[in-house]
Image 1 (cartoon, rainbow, N blue to C red):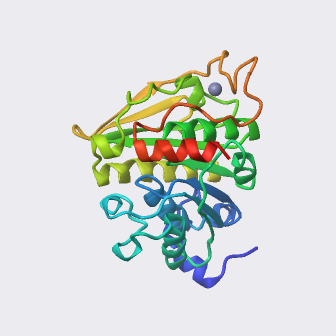
Image 2: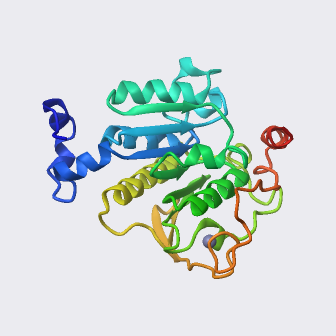
Length: 279
Ligand SMILES: [Zn+2]
């Protein structure tokens, strides 16, 4: 497969990088990423992945666009308010790069559909805003052997971690148990700076591209914490836990399981989550 004239022009500034080149571009065009959450992290991440020429993107989000999303969720515009986020994301990404095949998945990830939804992609980028989804994404990726880029953002800062199954710590190795209900403030309660979500979401896309290209040193075993007030990044070394319930020596999780903790203390989402588990 050779690149067309238009592809050479579109990707020229990354084609000149020796680490990318034609072979790397072809690798990206043949790759696929599932973006979980078309919100503050998923928006910049999906835009950069589509722009870079990742061949196939799935965008999974069960929410609709609200006016209060727009200061950070840059996939959506004012006219999208009230529409499914997966749908407006698909339109925006198609407009940016018609060569990328975009699948809009207007669904909530559950223990029942996680395996099926995730297995068709090369890598998963988790920009979800709640702990049940984070654990479900992590566990399913570990069970399927899928690379995962995790990220989180709240107020001025956030964190990111890349997980290659059986190489370095997974999300559950680092955080074995979900936090207690209300222990972690939600974006709604604590607030979030839109550009801070952009920093973390861009870092996540950057990590995903590195893993897909096989270049550089991904954030494996290194949780990067962004202190947005000081504009400082620091690294927390994280180790694989031999007692991890999903990637340890004697795992107890063999199938995707629902995590019971309520969602980030957000009453509406918590109710929706419990409703989604009951059928
Ligand atoms: Zn683990």
